[in-house]
Length: 324
Image (cartoon, rainbow, N blue to C red; front, side, top):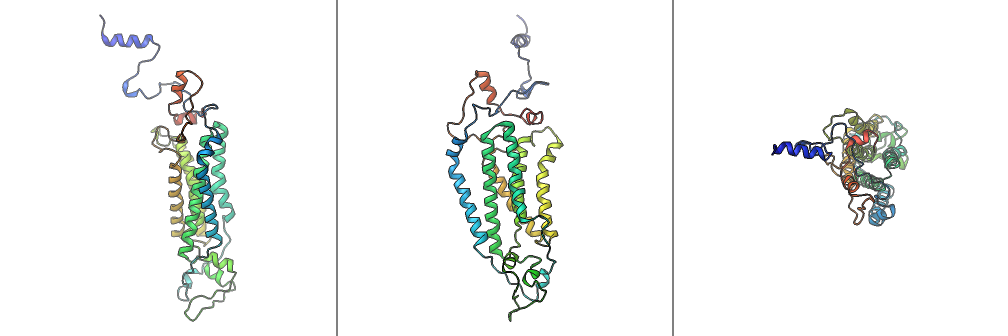
């Protein structure tokens, strides 16, 4: 009778499976290819119709929030905070055109992330991933916009260039109470009371912040493999959001507190909306959408080995090696 350990090693070798240390049992073999795991392949992914049947109430809610935002932005006037003769100097910064026009914020915050989601969909053909990413982004933008404009109208803080909106000819006129008596364009005056918080900052941090979370999950930022390039791609959207926000201070449209608070609003809302549809960055399945729709867990048509492979998480190396 031989040594039990030797017999065990012989049995493992004869079965064609390499012996592995129990500590590293869940780690891939050196040089081994990862199995085609959790690929959401055609025939195993949920259909668009099934997703919409489950999520139609969520999309209706996003639409309602968007309608409320339009009402708050267009119909409800902002509170007109007192701006008097003694403190008008705080609002006499030069009036400049916007470095980043307001119309372009929609493109930056919505269509740039959406383009990334679409590219991933073209590569992977995962309807679930594209839908969940799109729904989370839409919810984040709608909620952020509603929060931002509601706070703007409630606070009614004059912008740094408010003097030139109120008195475009430079001739200041005051009431008996020493409050300003504006004679400028009513639209410019109304917008002049919307300094806090910054809409550019909140929108950009909501959209691009959400994109950063999406990339962090897909690239496996916390998989303990130490690849700096992935950090660059994750922080690139945040850099763009920061530059757009700082431009509002340079244009004398906002103060530092306006863009900091606006950025925090967008960033926090984006995170909560992302986590509604995707797991934590520390999760083994980080970057893959939750499969919470009843009856949507289809099994592949292959044998048990294929079903076993499909149940395992995909690691970030798959993405970097072009296997995703």
